Each structure stands twice: as structure tokens, then as C-alpha cells.
Amino acid sequence: MKSLLIAGLLTALSINIATADTVRMGTEGAYPPYNFINDKKEVDGFERHLGDELCKRANLTCVWVVNEWDSIIPNLLAGNYDTIIAGMSITDERDKVIDFTQAYYPPAPSFYVALDGANADLKSGVIAAQTGTIQAGHVAATGATLVEFATPDETIAAVRNGEADAVLADSDYLAPIIKESGGKLVQVGEVYLGDGIGLGVRETDTALKEKMNKAITSMKQDGSLNKLLVKWFGADVKTY
Amino acid sequence: MFPVCADPSLLSGLDWFSCYLTTPKHLAFFESFGLVMLLIAVVAPVALAIGFAAAVASRSASPLLSLPGRGYIALARGVPDIVFFLFVPIALDQGFEYLRYLMICPDQPDGVWQGNNFLVCSAAKLPLSTAAPIWHSVYGFGLAVISFGLVFGAFAGNVLAGSFKAVPIAQIQTGASFGMTQSQIFRRILVPQMWVFALPGLSNLWQILIKATPLLFLLGLQDIVYWARELGSSKTSIYAYPHPDWRLYYFGFLLIFYLGLTAISEVAYKRIMARLSRGQATLAGSGKTGLRGGV
Image (cartoon, rainbow over all chains, first blue to last red; front, side, top):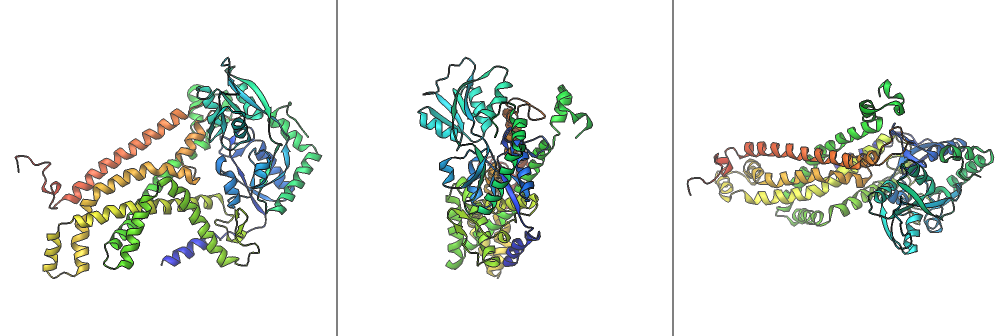
């Protein structure tokens, strides 16, 4: 009986005959405008539109998977999905564990943002950043006190309620928040980190990496990537 | 949802709220309450069955049964829940995939462990990459049920093993003097009488199970905590319904939900206790509420 149950479990999920080339796209879904879950409960944002276009050009069927940021690399390695497309900056440290395609988003500054008039000390104050980001690594290296949070939104909440003096995050994530804070939040510093954003893939997945690289190149050449960048990040964004 | 909600930026006040609270994202939030209650409803009998089997095994005369029974109860109770929930689902998932790898593609060129990857051929993946999202959720839910069942089964096993011992020896001796066999005594005397001793312990476990359901969040399932955090976090105007940080209200709502659920459980527990105590040689079974009038 028991072995019957196990055999049943093992076969029940094989009903769908594997069609070639379904790629599961792993994203965080909490980092607007890069990726977020819209009110229709769909993955939306720059990377959703970019990813769908890349899959079309590479002739792949893509499925979107939402995964917490702090386990996004382990779950790629465990095969739960096949790419990370989640605003992940290309760094040497990550490149040791996974592979990156070429960048689809050029290197951009990170902003320090604090409450207006708070006079935040960026060198020795308390700085909030999301766990496992290049910004968190940078804060730890500057000698400031780092407080880490699981989601980007919590880092902003920490500044608003005074738990942290400032937050360090990607400028394009912070820009709309500053704009809509009604003057409460202001940019107090900037720093250049990372080599742009690329798709993360497993080191063994060279075929997928090549397909995505080719698709990104074709989007760079015909200007459609630039159009997407301007659409989601505004006219001031760096383009290719 | 409603036609008036087509352009949320034009709405205000009550209209805005009624549209906001009926977005597909909110409906998913409401559905996830069903997911949590389904989990409790499925895990409780599973854990009770595992616990019963473990308790019976642990009091067996044969060490072949009693050692695994006692070992399981001691081990699963000794490991912190959070460690257990981080470890068991991953271990189960990789275990299942490894079995399927042996069945489907044992001659995979690079083996399963490739550097830091754990990767089986795409036909052996569980669920398959091509499977509909619902299967991925069902699979995750199944792993959660097994993990919860194993943890709570151990606690239930310990409670039941204790209540087997609490049944008065005279009852068992009476059964034996009537000429009942060991298994007749077990079925007719021991099991019916032990529930009343087990119930306080089991009701504790039930409350703890309810309170432990947010651990689903750790398993990557989109449960009420996930949605409360996602919906409550502040929203810029890139979303259709921008709002400031509302996590306090969403988490407050969860607090009320859990308090309600545990309060209802407490009422149900009192009823079951009264029912099972009827005719028992205990204080509750005598119909009195205390030792009034001296002993």
C-alpha cells in the first residue's frame, strides 16, 4: 500500500509530457519598477516585459516563479527554476556560484536616502539595506552599522520610523519613493556599485546562457531594450 | 472585479476601498486563509495517526518496534521546529527527485551533484518544469503536510504513550480476568479509556499547530503571512492602488484571525472533553466540578 502511494506520487506529476524548452524564470516580485506583483496578482515590471521578449526571441516557453530574495540563489542551484531575473547586479562574488548573461541594465548609482533634515551620518550611522545585496556589502565595508531586512520595502520603513538613519539601495528603486514621499525622504548620497544587472543562470546551463545572450544582443541592436528602459525608468536612465 | 473599478485613480473613499479589497491579489489573500485551515484540517489527522502508531510501537515488547518508535518521538521533539522545517522539505524534495532519477535517467552523464548544483534530468524533476503552477503549489503543500505531520506526530506520540500508561491498571486486570486477549484488552479497554487522558495534551498540540502554520511561509508557500506582508508594504503609484505602509493593519487582522481560531477551538475542546468523560472513573466523569463538601 505504502509503495503504491509513493509510486502514485512519483507518477502523478509526470502526466504533462515534457515539451521542449520550458524555462522557469525566478524573480522576487517585490522590487518595483524592476519586478513586482501587480494588483492582478501577475508578475509585472521592467523585467517581466524584458523576460517575455527575451523568451520570444530565443523561442522558449517561459513561466514566472516568485521566490524570496534571500533564497533566490540556492533555489536556482536546486533546480526550482532556471534563471534569476530579479534586479541582480553582476558581481565577482556571485559569479563564483552562478553564471551571468551580459548585462541588460547598465551600471547605475545606488542612493543613500534619509528623512529630510535628519542630517544622517553615512560613515558611522545606522544604514538599512536588503539582505544579500551589493548595497548591504558596501555598507558593511564602510564601517557604518548595517541593519539588514528581508524585503526592500522594510528598509524604507526602517528609515521612516527612525530605526535606521538612512537606506542604501538602487537609485531606480528609490527614485519613485522619494518622489511620492511628499518631501519627507531625500537623497543624501550616492555610490557606484556593481557591473550592471544580468540574468543569473546555473554554471552548467551554458546553452540557456548563450540563447539569452543572443536575445539580449538582438534587443540591444534594434533599440527595443532602450525603449523598455526608458518606459520603466524614465528618460534619465542610462541606455545602450 | 466590478466595472467601476476599471480606473482606480478616479476613485476615492468607500469606492476606492471596496475596489481595493476585491483586487485579484486580495482574493488570493482571502483564499490563503482557506489554505491555512486546509493545512490544519489535513495535518491534524495525519499527525494523530503517526503519533498513535509511534505510541503503540514505543510500548511494544519487541525492541524492533519500540526502538524506532521511541527514537522517532525523541528525535523529532528534540529538533527546533524552524530547523526541522528548513531541513525536512529540502531533504524530502531531493530524496524524491533522487528516487525518480534512479528510475528515469540513472545514466545521466554528470550525475546529480554537479559542483554546487543538485540537478536531475528534466524528466525526473518533481514537479516537472512544464507542470501547471497549481501542481507546484500542491507539491509544496504536500511537503508541508509531511513535515508538519512528522513534527506534530512525535508530540502526539508522546502524549498518547503517556495516556496509555494513565489508564488504571485495575481496568486492564479486570479485562484479563474476563478472559480477554491482549488485543481485545487493547481495543476494548485501553484505547477507549486513554483518550480522556490524552485530550488535554492533544488540545495543547492543536493550539500549537494553529500557531505554527505561519511556518508555511518558510516553505515558500504563499500563505496569509506572505500576502499580508506583500499587500501591507507601502505601494508607489506604479501599483493601481498606492498606499503607505499598512502592514500594521494586515498583521493586526492576522492576529484577530488566529485569536478567533484558537478561541473556537477552546470551546470545541470543552465539548469533546465533556463527551469523552461521560461514564469515566475520573473527577470530570463523576459529573462534579470539584471536591465539594470535603473528601
